[in-house]
Length: 409
Image 1 (tube, rainbow, N blue to C red):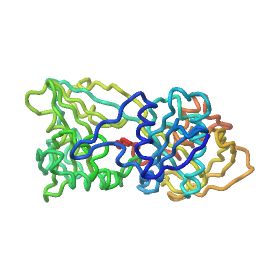
Image 2: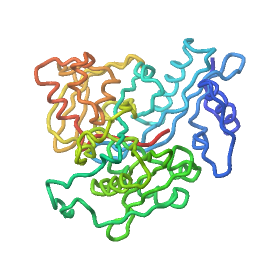
Image 3: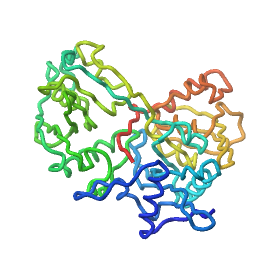
Image 4: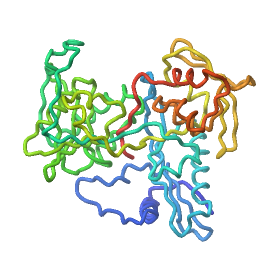
């Protein structure tokens, strides 16, 4: 079997192969773009070929920036379009492609890789761990009244919980530049968020509001008229569905939530992509008004260089831990002393006795602060070697805010 990078001439073969792997057919090109594969970087796509040259597997990577705790932006590879033809599964094709890809990523000098898992049982064995989570919130309109905040007037907000901005309704096709700018400001401050390169917007490659699918946009402007948030939504059969809500602060989210919850001729509002611990449920006068469903993993993280990754993110508690890390897929093992002082970390190899022993996939899960190390200790995946080690790890790895990723790739 041969695994090689593709060229522009291979794009049709790549697209046909990955669709066949999932039992799908490619969508025909339409005016206005919108094909998800148009954003692929052909020099970062891989084809697995049999000895006689037949394509049987695919994998690709996008060039993104990932926001780490502490608002640090780092380059990251977004792995996508991974598939093997049903006729060639369980023959080592996937493992060979993933190993080839990880080697290439390291050769590029990258220390992090991320993906969205089509099946949760696949990617752990390649060192990826679920690191951000998302859910949907369904709210019947007759129960959607928001309570008056009890901590009134905080941060200059009006006592009734309203804001001094305005909401304008636009069509997504007529405000793409504004959406791109607002999203970019949002993702730079949100741990776990990925960049959306300009070509994604230009090619309309992705999901709404990037894609050509018709959507209305509730665009929020502050008191000075500057756009600072939006909600992309559609209405069908009495249900208003919010694809994504992008805001730069909580007051703007509340204003947009108030707007969509007040929409006429709607029986319920569905908020997709709601991050864990979001305050919206607490803002309803009826705490049970919002029904949470579809709670699932979203962004999976894989560390390729442990010291570089741990020293790249921001930290919010001082302390030190010795981490014994196993990477069975790459056949590697390391023990590191992590020392955090004044928001910065130092990470060096050590022969000291470990505080925690863990798989690299578990390190990926805790890396952004969305999974507490103690949870994985209780699950039997991380081993704590001394009392208090898990508690200290929880304090060290926590983020300034829960990590969340909206971008689909």
